[in-house]
Image 1: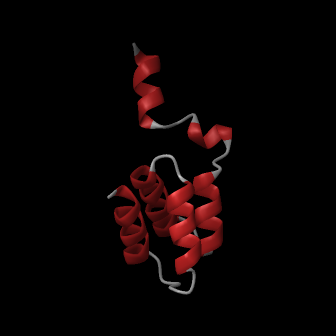
Image 2: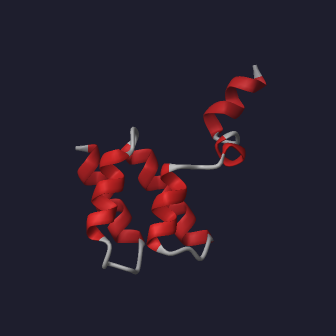
Length: 78
């Protein structure tokens, strides 16, 4: 189940364990929970954001950030 994997992956990577309900809800709201969890994990290791900020940024990425996804880059190369 992608929802369970999303929650588990995020919980393993963040230090603040007080936001379990927010993590579950964010994974539930995401159209691609597994990819969402990769975003949260990636940002948490490279950027000093709170758990709420990580969840929010990955649920609602800036257009500039989402334009550099590997899938989009591959399409534009052809």
